[in-house]
Length: 416
Ligand SMILES: [Fe+2]
Image (cartoon, rainbow, N blue to C red; front, side, top):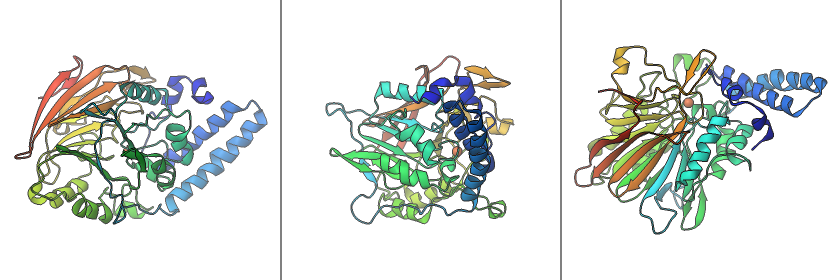
């Protein structure tokens, strides 16, 4: 573990993320503040502290801010027409075991005591695959990628069968450069003993019953200055990704009745903040006759929420699950009105701690287990408590998806 992390109290670290807005200015400022504090923690020279303050906090902030707002976005990555096409067979890392397990974490890249605790818990379960659903704080810089994922002391757990990362809006606050250049080369899928590096921000893991499709909503989540006021970013799936879904994944094949699990950073449905219907609309149109209820897991909202089977301006019915409680302060407030609250099926509103006037919930992750036609999702908090366990069963004859709750914590808030 880095010495500066160990020196800070947990409350100190998590406080930086309280009231975190979604403006790039604010996030850049906080990234620079973090750089500054780390410099301070490593030096005892007063003059050094002052000089670091000016060089990193002010000039550094302006530099990063301008680069992010006006700099060039990193080129988009898609799969080549031959070789690695981004579809991989779900494989257990234990040859004699048929069950395949995945740990899903979102908004985890915060380098806090809490995110470390969640990662260490993931390691105890040793899932075959680990997937980050995006957002590395504050602005997805190389340093932040290193601290969370690639440094020798970083706590991210790399699954033996694969470790993959989606792109969030925070990675794009620094134009996606560190995400594409530093993080993706460290991510991989193990194919017959060979680690294939992750090449694009979207992918498909599949077996005979299920297809788990990672979607990239991050690249189109951040707009250009001024223009975004007139035309707000809608997180649409870019043409390269749509072509891949159509021509390589063949999502529109009506004979393919496998269960579909979509993963994305941005929510298809949200009762709390803006939701993003565009990707769902695009998928619904592409699926055509093959449209059927899906499981869709996302982050972005810093809480653990399950939505009733529903849709958002398209016919695509989804069991929406928000798992943005990976490493940031977890929110527990109810939606602003009853109409929004009606969308909720369950919501972990348990209070773990209070900092200043804030009541913070429990960080955690989603543990997926695939066994034949059954897909079980277990939501574990950082104390290794089962908050909720639910199960879907896919019928390969008619693509019917059955759902049932297996277990729930006595203090989990559930809605009829
Ligand atoms: Fe986000």
